[in-house]
Length: 271
Ligand code: NAD
Image 1 (tube, rainbow, N blue to C red):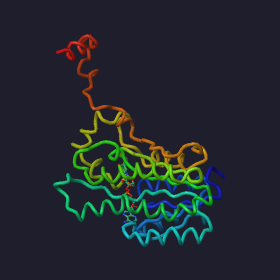
Image 2 (spheres, rainbow, N blue to C red):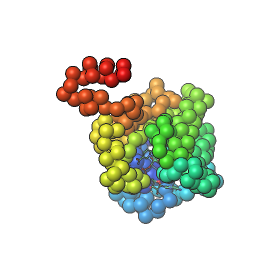
Image 3 (cartoon, protein in one colour):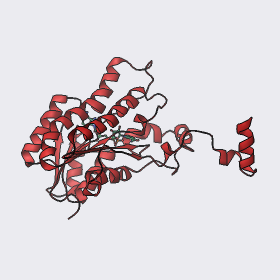
């Protein structure tokens, strides 16, 4: 029936965007999936659409760390096993450190880092029994600096290195990996994808020339969660259309187009 037959998966923030696409992908490959989200209406709609007894919902506010712990404990007891945890729920954040206050910083850290810690620490004993796996959703913002993403970049960097730490600590029974998406067309990113000036700024940055579809990120998450990645742990899978393949230097090919550009470039560099 597929790579995830007889597997039980929890996807946090599973009612929209990358989480929703992940729920669809895991479910389509046979998993029993629990959609954990704060939006009950969206959870109910998705369960109805999936239309099998392998789709379940759990209303959880990932800001409430006690509720996160309870959610994982309850679900592991209810299904008698836990095989896959996808720590996807997160919030964006805009501002330099001088623009944001401590309350905002704490809010970002709570959902983007603390909830990953809490869900993982509760799930790991169950995943150890099932030889299960964790996939965290980080971001390319956690790999390099970006303008006005101070809290978000710090939080996602923490997720990437927490991934490595957990992979080291809990091998060989539990594999732990993360994905780092670039710009992905979800409701979270409409402030970017819906802004023509920002999209023009992305112009030369995204080698594949467009935002990712949520399903393209979900494909990477499903790969890492599957037996196809059985020898992969502690990995950060970058899904960014080539954005971080580029060092940020000017586009010499375009600027020097039509000229004998190797000579021109050499002269320019010597100057
Ligand atoms: P989204 O807004 O489409 O979906 C987020 C989901 O999380 C929603 O269903 C929302 O209801 C749920 N959620 C929000 N707060 C919650 C809470 N307190 N408790 C429980 N659920 C909550 O966003 P998305 O773009 O799919 O983002 C998913 C993950 O991907 C996030 O961790 C985000 O940081 C990361 N990411 C997104 C992009 C992008 O460009 N969209 C890029 C890199 C990383």
